[in-house]
Image 1 (tube, rainbow, N blue to C red):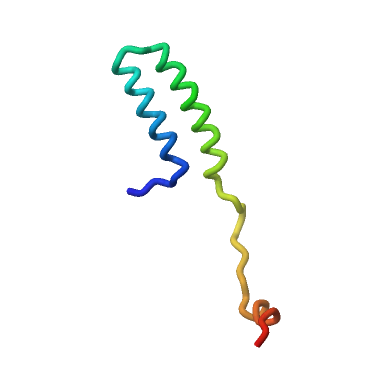
Image 2 (cartoon, helix red, strand yellow; image 1 turned 120 degrees about the vertical axis):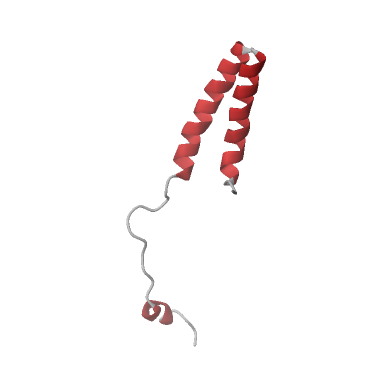
Length: 69
């Protein structure tokens, strides 16, 4: 499965949190978790649809007016 480029940094940060947890470095894990939460919030904003509602339909007639045939 291919992930969008924006998700790679979040995935790396999530793995970092788990590594710190498994090593017992809970202070570092807490800092990494806070950063992960911030990254998730920012990611949610950027992955939302850019256009709401139905897509505009382009009719061939409207495009033909602008062509130089």
